[in-house]
Length: 311
Image 1 (tube, rainbow, N blue to C red):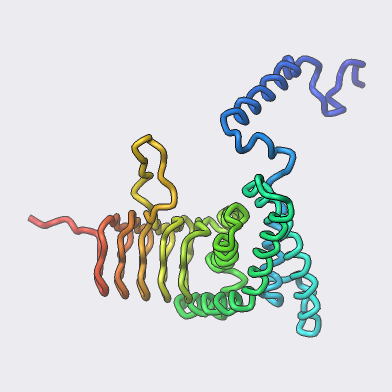
Image 2 (cartoon, rainbow, N blue to C red):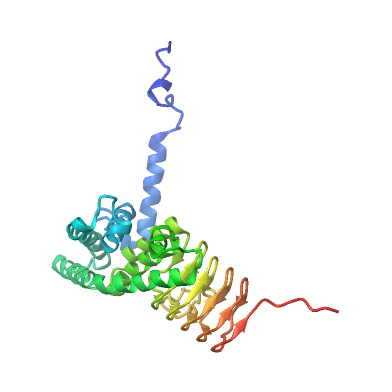
């Protein structure tokens, strides 16, 4: 039997447990205001809202299902209802991602008329939708590259259903498309959704050619300005990174500089290799595991770990 002042059964802590809640709330309000005063561009947009990671995660699941309905769609999809499922799912997903793009543009184009925001959002979603058939064909080549490159794969269906790298590449190709069309925040959220699900970090600005395969994949990092050619294969824990931020004379970080590697066609980079800076890895080169590389490699070059000398 509980006493009259025992609130544990109601799931509430006794009064005073949290301290002075009014004082805490006032402190949090003051902290928010200091942030908004320091970053004036954010100050007037809290009520407008930003793209939702939660909503985008659901949209991406729908887009994956629309692109590969029999493999990544729900279990009720069959050949006889495939077209109907794709149409319904695509209409819903495009409508919802349009809303997310509209939120981003409402912030980034905040000084523009609402009509301008609507026009730009319509332009982006129109080009995005029109590009989906070609993007599906590009993804088919990625899946085929994974099947051809991994003797453990028994079918392309297994690759689609089971390989985290393929899921990461699907997310990247969709994100890269939106990034180029003018929705970089929505694109970045898509890439973050993929990181959580796969452990593979590909910035949506990275340019990746066809027939791309990441074997295993956990811990792979590909930076914003990286350029990857055709038929490139990476293994787990590979980093295509920068050598650090560059600052101007006033100490401000310079953004948009080309600071990540260029990897040409038919290159293989083995597990744990770290490639930093705007270096070029020539066509057909092979980079061994755990190599730390800050210099370019010619076409056909082979770079392995140094071996200790014998005396």
